[in-house]
Amino acid sequence: MKKLMSLILVGTMCLGMFACGTTNNEQQSGSEKDTTVAESSENVADTAATEESTSTLLCDEPTTLIVYGNWSESPTTEDDQMVHDKILELTNVDLVRVGSGDYYNQRATYLSSGEQIDLMLESCWWATDLIAQGAYQDVTDYVEEYAPNFYTMMDPSYHSFVKWDGKYYGIGGTAEMNLYGLWVNKTMLDEAGVAVPETIEDLENVCAKLLEKDPECYPIVANWTWLQREYESSFTEAYVDWYDDETGLLKVDFEMPGYLDFITAVKEWYKSGYLASFCEPGSWDNDKFTTALMTGKCAFVSYNCQGFLDLADQIASQPEYVYVEAFAGDEGQRGFEPRPSIPYFYAVPSSSENAELAIKFLNWAMTEDARRLMNHGIEGVHYNIDDNGYLVKTDAYDNYTKCYNLCNVFLSELEEEPATDNAKVTEELLAEYGMNTYFGKNDAYGVNMNLASIPQDIRDKQASDKTAVTEIIAKYMWTDEVDLAAVEKAIADYSENNSEYTKLRTEIYKNCLELLGVTTDDIRAGLEKK
Image (cartoon, rainbow, N blue to C red; front, side, top):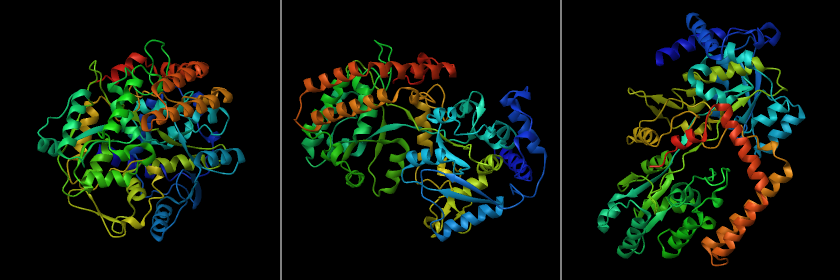
């Protein structure tokens, strides 16, 4: 792979010799091409690999390239400026980051104003409507000619998520999967003389014994999101936002069979002290969570897979935490909800006059040297590399705010030496639970789910009604203000009043699956519960 990347780097430098002024008219049109995208990418890569160059300059004269994303403007420190100047030196691109505190609203403002933005951070899920409105331009020819690294780095199965009607409007993207996992403090359980539970009933019995031994301990620690993603499927027959088997409709979590059993159980855990008091949504605080974890008195900890492993590395005298499967429900159902990160890419707005340069720059940004520079700063200044190839930070490392890392859309291969074998553990967990590194049949949420095609009044009512139901559920779970009957009525009213939205949303989702050649059975197989 490294040999291949080195060949690609050579080709990229050669392609960079082209001037910025090439126009679409100078290139072969997409309709004249009789090769597939895959064949085209192979030809580009082969050609690039055989040419030589001594420069990574992407254009003849320094040219400003304006990038919009949901992060701060740049530069903000002297070290940021150093990285900016290095990028300019290497590429002749004066990279300007336009920041935003209200990304989505300001994004729409920029796009409608016609103000020049050359690269816009965009969601692969929500770009469809904007593309239909003409907000982004077709850059297929540029991608096929100037982006061999994109074809090399991104698996072909990922390309369908950044193409519309067979055309590219930008490139890039992240293909990460988030796995929300459950860890057991084995040391704590051993001292209490109890075994790791396998069922929800076992869990409740163990929690009671833990509190009996130490009333100050925290048997279950998880915020509301983690509780849903890791315990809900032990009660219900479906994952969040999954199909109701009886109706065939894509419904929200509180409409799922078994959901009332789930929230009733959690309410009892909270009242019995099994669930830590600070886990109530209104009082949750990450600092409280970290403090509780540092005491070594947290028994069952739910967290994002990699996030917990990283956190555990930072805590001294960490007790022995063992990763376990979700606990089985009454009928043996169990399973975590694998939730893919929203895949982003950089689209080229129609207002940009630098479309060719924008694609060239993204292609350069995918090289190993570029990713190191934008993610970690300058070697010898912000970091060094040890004999094992790991990153060693210098005192200046934190002075660089990473405002040029393209929002982690392009991930760096350079890593710090792990304190544990967390990387291996994470890889094994992802493999064990049937998830890969690309969006495909495991994506349970669809792609380009153009909810904007649903009438605004229907969407507004659904959003308002959903909020109202979740507020009633919260009052039931964390207070005694409402009873279960009130929750049941609120859910029934929601289902009746938003049936049209549910049907339209399901139709959109099914259409997305059909375009991808994926069936609901494929997805169920990919998300098979353990």
